[in-house]
Image (cartoon, rainbow, N blue to C red; front, side, top):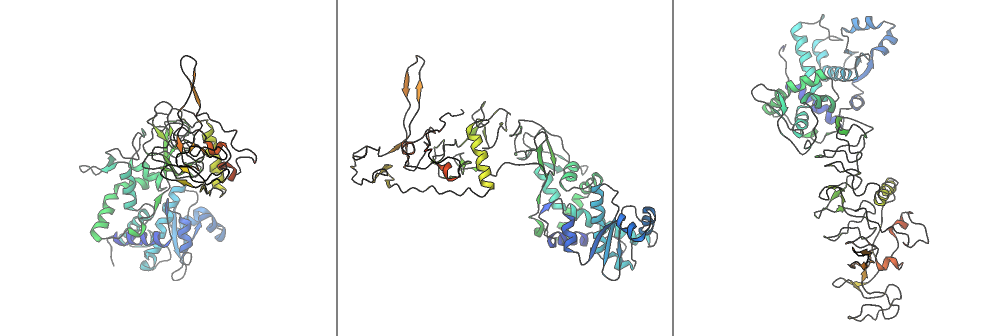
Length: 464
């Protein structure tokens, strides 16, 4: 009979259980594992055992031989895992995982006993099985390579001389974080295990990693499992953007690492190669010119800069700058309100919009070849206006006037736009074709503009 622990098999079995139970996120959902192996074992509390047997808690503990939990074999190949519900939640999780290890590794069948007990077994065999079950539990709840990936993302490396894991470098995730953390604290919170279990995981992390390497253990089947834990603002619970020193929602500088079902994150909206929001956070249009500063469909600025430093470009939903905590250009503006409305419409499944226009034009000159107002097709190549109704043949914007130091008003420069542009990509002002009602306001499609309002009540104010 083997008396020295075999740590290879517990790791292999733990990876198989994770794959078979379709675990996709850490912390591991033990309910999913119980459901997957429902024909092999049940999980019950000591309280339920007390009710069934009519015993006191002390009598149940004595019968099972453990204050924490035990696996009991009823007949051949059928088990019940009992746990003490009076323990802390994280200790219960490890206890249950430990007992699942005994079942999966066939320890009770090997020993020929209905319940493993220190008093009823040869001590070296008992210790071997306990070590193997603990190895299974830590690699089920906190697999070695996943723990290493978490630490690596936070710049934590192993120090060769004493074997400890310490913060050795900054990473994209921790840049400007300003919070103290350790390998043990991250693992405890990310994998929802006790501080003692986290300390053991860190202490044996390199040992388990070496075991993968020496025995060529394949962990690829669990590589897709992601993390639920993240850095959240302690004031408003917004998930921190990597590299941010301030919360983009409230401007706070304090974050904590945790799994938080009440936390929230902004939409996953990116920027294109020209550092423009793509798609537009309000109307969803992704058709922008390379030098566009505004969405040509709804007029929303395509960047949300900090009001203190325009070089700091923020998420479209951000109220405060990620870098300095100052207000963003969108904070409190009509643009921010429209973004909130678009979020509501998107959540209700009413965000699909079509912007194609039937206005015929020459792509080389942006000049229309058929008047959209009177259907005149006799357009002279040198003409600037329709000879029938007088409509400009190029869809320019309607610029605001500006006042000089002497109180004189001047017309701003007008810009050419595509025929279906409602707003100018350069200055954000409405276009001639939109003003004349030739283009329907994008908001009417979403029910955001009342019928009869053809865009006359637009707000030309720009927040920066």
